[in-house]
Length: 131
Ligand SMILES: [Zn+2]
Image (cartoon, rainbow, N blue to C red; front, top):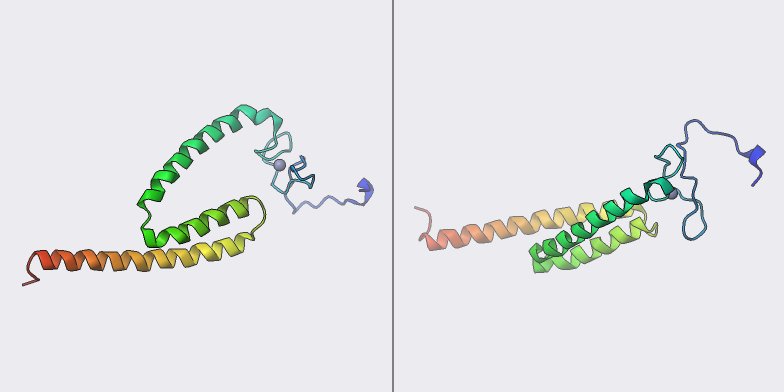
């Protein structure tokens, strides 16, 4: 690319200077003084390692969380989990993922309401009905 043709655009945020694994320029905003994103700054290797360790702990938490997801919602959970990975890999439009999340939220809310009604009914039955 001819450098002379590249006009600096002050409204555009500075992008990371590193290439991605596929050779395309990294699209992440530069957040470090060296002009890289968090993933690509060579000076942040130790912090990245710490973040990965935290991430490992978080995925253990996710596995535990998964056990708490009601069975009828676990398919949605799977789809959302895949979507998260696809957004991260740049394969899914974040807007689409956001719409999916919003539909999923509505489904969870409806399911939670049904669950509460069921529990309430059980309680009422146990107590011999409301007097
Ligand atoms: Zn980068």
